[in-house]
Image 1 (cartoon, rainbow, N blue to C red):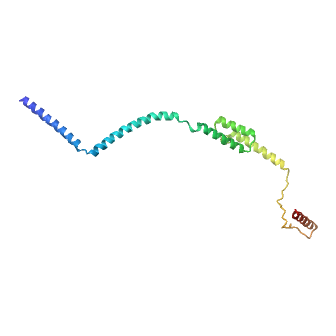
Image 2: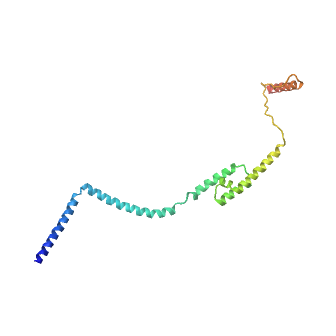
Image 3: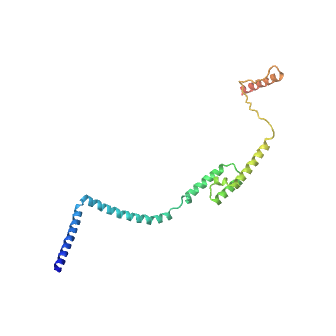
Length: 183
């Protein structure tokens, strides 16, 4: 009897196993052709994504090493030098200050404009400007006033004709008008 029970148990287990397989087959048959196609596309996209991520990781390391800094390119250095030379030539500083500005810019790897703002050059430029202003002030020569008078033959001078000085001034004006009309 025990054997009969064992056989029955085995048969019931086999029947249960077949039932599970039948259920799985039924589930796979439940998917439509469209769903199966979408599932295949999903798996293909996941594989492509994984390949691309690996390729990206491999390329990131090599790209970082290959790219030079834009500041270090020869073209940028050349353009910067040309612009700095133009800027410096436009400045009204003596050659000595210009040379010092070039040297500071080269040593500190900065532009000429920045070099001219350097404390040492600021001092040199201030000294130069102070000497220039002193030279210009002493070359002027005193308290001479300048007149803004321009001669106009149509407008006579505003003088008092009742005095001899006024009459003399008016005669000078008439003579000057005569000379300008002849020319």
